[in-house]
Image (cartoon, rainbow, N blue to C red; front, side):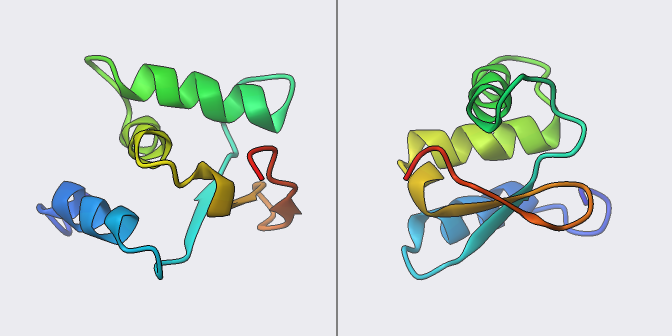
Length: 85
């Protein structure tokens, strides 16, 4: 995504700050025994140096209080219940 859209971080921040923006996160590849642990683990890693892009994105959602209205999906694109609602 960085090569295609170099300003992706600012674009995400703008989307997160807009309460009308619908957000969906694919959790495939994240470790954890539950959706909650997958998301919170990613948010913690996303706040540190060396975070992967999706971890940083999830950290932005967490810090903005947007996890409760984020849609989560698995690798097949199927909805996963949101534990933050």
